[in-house]
Image (tube, rainbow, N blue to C red; front, side):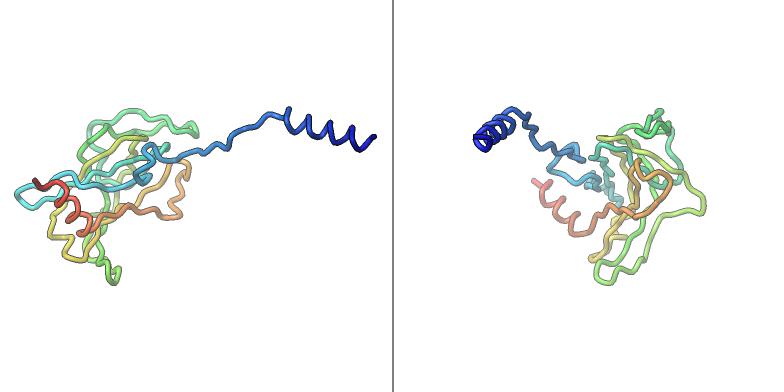
Length: 176
């Protein structure tokens, strides 16, 4: 009889305990896109290629720029710090590097001895340009960035990448 009573109590407790669905804390605002990415914006007649650096994550991202631009707004980070956040779609001059895809040798870049840390708030983007010929047939451009929760430590290094192949696909999809 005690076994039967214990079995009934166990059955009752397993039914009575609340069931919590498994929660997934999605990092990305749009789950069909990477958390941070470079996307083709437009190509000018003079050969300047414009890319959009999009922050598709729940956190602000930081990266090095020549200057932060003139349109900035206070941005409160989750750790309590307040930084200057860039306005959406502002034109920036980020630090970037271009490398050969096949051997990963850097052959171009845009960087400074002194720079500013710029911040893109969650869901926003910034645009920048560079000469299209710098990509070459087997080149790719990358911008290094950090998530706000990493603090001042820039490790591990995160990179957002765009290649000549990505450009070709973007041009094909936008042509009539």
